[in-house]
Length: 82
Image 1 (cartoon, rainbow, N blue to C red):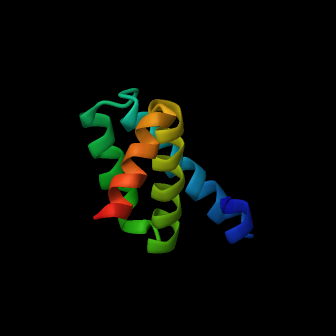
Image 2 (cartoon, helix red, strand yellow; image 1 turned 90 degrees about the horizontal axis):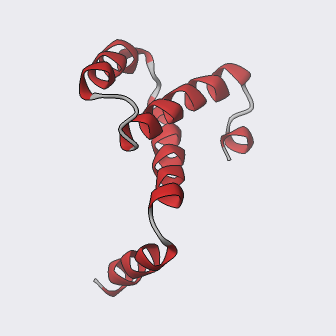
Image 3 (cartoon, rainbow, N blue to C red; image 1 turned 180 degrees about the horizontal axis):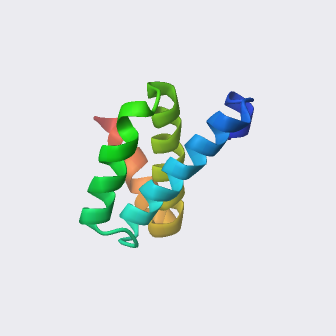
């Protein structure tokens, strides 16, 4: 997905690095200490559009891995009804 929105290879690499870190946190592969240090050292230099894309792709990827389809359907249905 980010290859379509972002043509610059450096931007794509930044997105992928942050996406991997986000997923690592979500699946508890990266503990709080390492996560805090990673974000403390990288966030100041990350443009908002890069961070937004990394969060979008990372969280979506995790949800596909972790959430059964039935739960996703219930969440979507609930959000649409509120």
